[in-house]
Image (cartoon, rainbow, N blue to C red; front, side, top):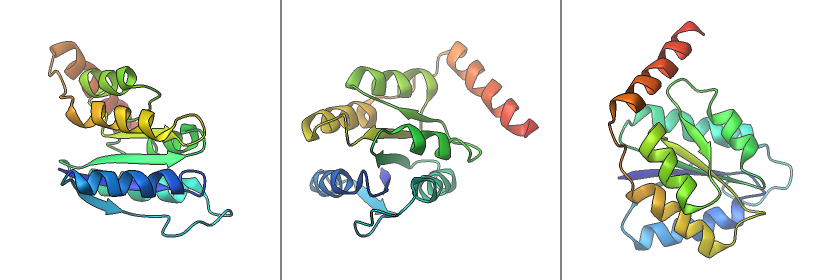
Length: 149
């Protein structure tokens, strides 16, 4: 599985630590930036880069890092085919994958410590979409809304 990572200045440090942790677990990682800490960078650019890569590789998943997680989620969801969810604990990450087939999660570097982030990411990566009819129906409705844009 390929995991696409992106962060602005607010999530840069957490992204770098998580990247090394994921590599040690033998995940294939693509890091779209930030490549260095820049307190003036802007999150929408990194969210869009991750989202476009996830859309291009249907097997890939994305993880975004910023101060709150909210802005990254909003920006990523502007890309057709993305189902990004801001998650705050392992249960919310599991639910996002099981019910919404989320392909990107966004984490708050301000409100989560490293161990919490690892637990959340583990939950997301190890959970499968349920394929239940009601969830498939709802995702198809999301696709229909996207087609109208």
